[in-house]
Image 1 (cartoon, rainbow, N blue to C red):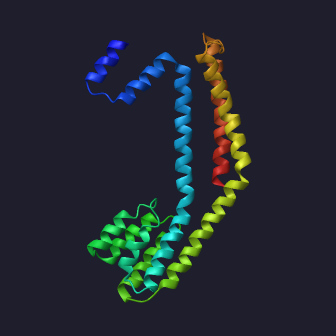
Image 2 (spheres, rainbow, N blue to C red; image 1 turned 180 degrees about the vertical axis):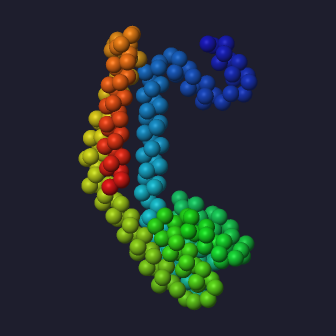
Length: 219
């Protein structure tokens, strides 16, 4: 084992990967706990970013409206407003606006980037860019709509928090306990029919929890 790790380091393998291999070899139980913690953290981080997108869209649209009210062109308004929404992937739209590309191209990028008002914001941008109208009130109204969608999603998650927690416990806890006991050597008999029964039971339990979670998520 030590020889393989040394060869890996000499071959240019990242020290972090070597550390992971060492932990997995010396303590599989600790390795599983770290993997679960890492997966949980990243899932929580992605969920938080997804939940904030409607509010960031509202900030972006308010910024566009404010820039138009201040006398800026709609292209400059998009560039300035994008700084308020770092998680919406507005960089393509900003690059097109800075390069002076046709309004139709920029409108297409806006539609793809905005989760709530994509089509409406794209249409408003095309109208303002083509006609030169001062339509800041349109973007302000879209900002209110995006913020409202974010509030509804937040309330939905609060109301379904108990059901989601129950689904996680029902589906995840037996799996975690079984894996932990197996790694520690005190798990169920995995020889012959015992392995099939254990896998079937854990699988059905996890499937039930997953179905509950999916139903709650679609509400």
